[in-house]
Amino acid sequence: MAHHLYVVEDVRAADLKKESIRDGFGRGLVEAGKRYDQVVAICADLTDSTKISMFAEAFPDRFVEAGIAEQDITTVGSGMAAMGKIPFVSSYAAFCPGRTWEQIRTTICLNDQPVKIIGSHAGLYTSPDGATHQALEDITLMRVLPNMVVLVPCDSVEAEKMAPLMAADKRPNYVRLARGASPILTMPETPFEIGPAYIFREGHDITLVATGTMTYQALVAADMLAKDGVQAEVIHVPTIKPLDEKTILESVRKTGAVVVAEEGQIAGGLGGAVAELLGEHYPVPVKRIGVRDKFGESAQNPEELLKHFGLDAPHIAMAAHETLSRRRD
Amino acid sequence: MRQIFSIEALELKANEIRQDIIKMLEEAQSGHPGGSLGQADIYTALYFNIMKHDPHNPDWDERDILIQSNGHTCPVRYATMAHAGYFDRKELMTLRKFGSRLQGHPERTKLPGLENTSGPLGSGLSQAAGMALALRMNKQQHRWVYVTVGDGELDEGNNWEAIMFASKYKLTNMIVIVDRNNIQIDGPTEVVMPLEDLRGKWESFGWHVLEIDGNDIEAVIDAVEMAKAIVEKPVVIIAHTIPGKGVDFMEYDFHWHGVAPNHEQAKLALKEIHTLRGKINQEHD
Image (cartoon, each protein chain N blue to C red):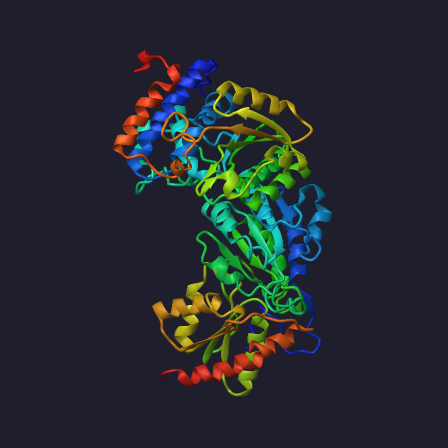
């Protein structure tokens, strides 16, 4: 059963609305700017494509354009944070954090400055641009950094709520955004805080853990599994670090089998985090869904790529059956 | 802070700081003497004459900011801070040891009075630019942001991004001091990766350039005064320094960029610094 408070009733409805996650975040950043005078936005010549343009229009005096210079936006952000600003630094994830990992490590994380890094165009939803622009490694890169909070919204509505909460958070944050339009699952009244994982669908046979656009795929997979008589619990993890271990462990103690799905490299991301957690605390069969040590490629729409790399709902459902067959009952 | 106005007294202070640098590095048995000794006059001028700061209130919200981009030369900053009263000089002997606030490369969160974490090169200038811009937005442009940058460090592209950025935003509340000592780890800068025409490079990026003898404290103070009066462009002071300044066998030699003196070498170095070019009175013993 879908949790009626949290997500839309029918994830397979033909009229399910779609919107790009970055659009929602753009609106949220304007709200963050209204709530906190110290919020500033720093961009690297991608103002419109990262949707920071909305903030730039609302607060032109608090918008900084550094040109095509990702190392600069990162470190200028560190300096502005040191002087009391709340900088949102924005580029494509392939470039920042892709190119700027060391600057993030030294001048933001070790230096402990509350810079907010927006990695737009992450994952396969950057479909036509091809492998160079489809950042699949960003979650892993940011997850290994002490002090860093790693966030991945599942839709534009959640992304909109996320921005002001990031502004209020005193830690360095990384948020991963997607380019293409993706289904809207949550509602304005759906609760969201930085930290918790949310049970979007209750079940007792298997736990599906997902983040970002894959939360939608997991919910569709749960629907498919229900038709086969398998009741899957779907946990949406918008905060990958620090991980809500309690919610995941409670679910897995009930189900005894897990599939983790993310739209990124299979190594070191959410799947890695969950496997590490369960390996130490409650070893059960785990199957990770993600891109298996490959780069992406161009496609007209993201669905083609999700299918090609084995990330879409039917693949998740198949993985669930396979994992259940390995469960020691 | 206790401001020192007499140039002779400042020179004496720089001399004491150099002696502490040698003692610290000998005790730690690792670290970077070349740039640390070379910048002792600049750091003395900044902490004892130029900057507005309060060693007993390091977070004072009216203080000037000093960003050290060339973090490997932190011994000079630590020694100068100790002399200025930020902490007891005895603590200098903990440099690079377990549990010390004086990390091998400076960490802001470890020691009050540090404004940034550095060591990985090339990112101090842009942090300073971010600070200068934020201070202007906060209507605090009367606070100055100083940044020391190594010359070899200018190989890093991040610097040139920041140099363009500061020029675009006309960040005239920051003053950059380049420690132009012509050496880096692998050899002379002009062999490893030529920087000249360094003045022309900065000028073509829209900066006003001042060039001084960076081991002349009066020249450092005068140049900063002049830099403050230039309101059209951001200002860089190319400070020509002698690496290993004050110790004959270290001066100009890139091998002393990052090697600590042993006991015998330290003894010799201390003796030399003590009597530097006869400028320092023997009764100073």
